[in-house]
Image 1 (cartoon, rainbow, N blue to C red):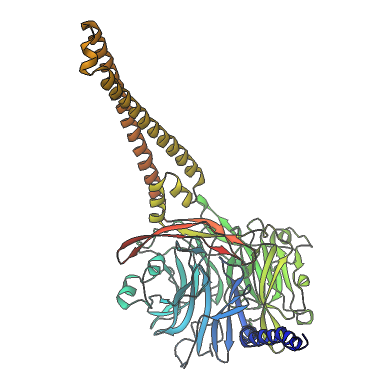
Image 2 (cartoon, one colour):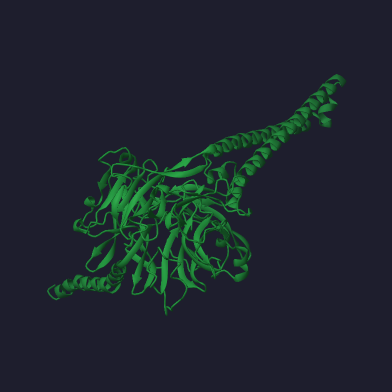
Length: 616
């Protein structure tokens, strides 16, 4: 036994060494690489609408800015854009006058998540890259339902330079700021049907495809139009535009495009444009953003006047409310006054590519911002607009005091809902560089806790074949629960009634056949009198009448059943495009998705597919 002891003792020790070697070889390098990619000049963190553990951010490496995805649940980082052999591209400095550093050779970033998943569960996003032949171009790509980054990248057709993409709330349209080749300034442009670009296969679109999918100009103001932002109802687009003030001096201000009265892409006229921020005409106003309830527009305001020589990098936050006229049309905007005057927050650090951030709850209107106060670590605040505008001194709350672990010199904050409360992504100083940080479960939640949801498109074909199988299933797939119950109930009654009439008819036929076999055979009739034979044939006629009556009822039931099925299919066919809400998965707890059933073409025909996905 003594001879066995050294071997027995060495086995677990060998296992420990082997496990440690694996840990060092596989886990630590990947983790170290991920931690390294979370540091640097981190900007513009943005939560994915379909997975709140997934954050996109841009990171500057020397003179190149690139785009990354950070999976907080897995602790992994994936790079979306990669630049090798970057080359100087001319003629781009003026376009990004109010944007990033124009000295960057190739800017990569400005990611905008599509707020709606497509019918296959894919999370599309738009981003800007200088990989385009014309300079800064607009590109699309997606994440698979499993969270994998797709190999496919689609370049949107535009003969010029593009930037600042923004999706409409329903995910069907995409607006951006663009500058055509050999044109001065930049205008806003619209892709009215972005889904058509999803259906192609392969890499970037061909030129002939791009010619048919050219965007539509929305503005006619070559002085400058930047940072478009959709209203939550999709009827308006707020944007930053440069226009002359009353004294003839050009200054940046907040304007509004009214799409509610626009005839659409077929119209030759541009949408009606409204200047909103007239009360700040002596100052520059930048980067508008909408509150989730659509009641307010926040924006940055310069601390220096337009005619002052000082730069306008020090900025405050203003808030305005829309002023409507006849038929509810927006006429202008009214800048709000509050406890601190017309500026809700002073000396803030603005977001790089978007307007002031809002708390995600629709039930409130609260701004989240970083105060530029280095002695206090650039604290993050939450300010309630209603309290501020009613001169309530307790309108703001410091969120960064809730952070676990010391963070300092915060920048670029983004907010979303989490299962346990408000969730923030931001950058903070770590040594000489910034680092991406995430914090969850912050108060006040204002209804931002619990399982958030994301919309997903529903395909017409997938809904129709479900309704063909059974009434109401297609409506349930479309999210129309009321009609799903109605059609399911009516369909069940019609199906049950039809089955009953079939059974009744068969019973009558069996009675008729049994009577013929037992009572109408020659042997049985030979022993009967003439009157008794006549009675038997009268009975036979009565049984035949019963069979015919049951057949008529059966036919009526079949017609009714077919009518219910046809009505159900017609109702399913209507109302597209549409989408339904489903839970957002943040990889924090077990989630079971609804089963997916479908048909897929194969080399020999069609095959049925069934999938059940469980997330841990």
